[in-house]
Length: 148
Image (tube, rainbow, N blue to C red; front, side, top):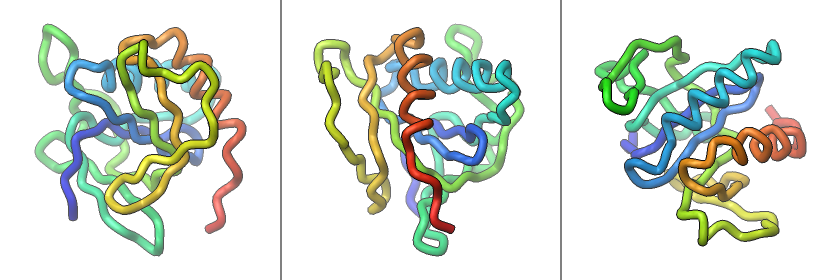
């Protein structure tokens, strides 16, 4: 298994991985997405915050939270706090957080390779939760159904 620096969550039947440097807002975005989708009655839960184990399973990318940080998310200024979580998820989409001046105005179909797997990618401005709460549901709605 490969250890990666990222945050992952489950939304409905989709797994998302959020990538970006420390301080870019991965945890904040994951928490906002979980709250937004839960409010709409869609199952959503954090998988892991900051560190994840990546592995191949039946041709899919599976991310797992290490036992030492399972059920914890870092709250800025407070440190790790308990949260509801899922121990693992099959990942369907990547979100990369970048400085605002690096976000393309119109995004072509893009991919991100995570642990050797190519995933559909959306690039968003770091620490801009408001824009992400519009973009992520739109991208999720456009993803094709899984071929299990």
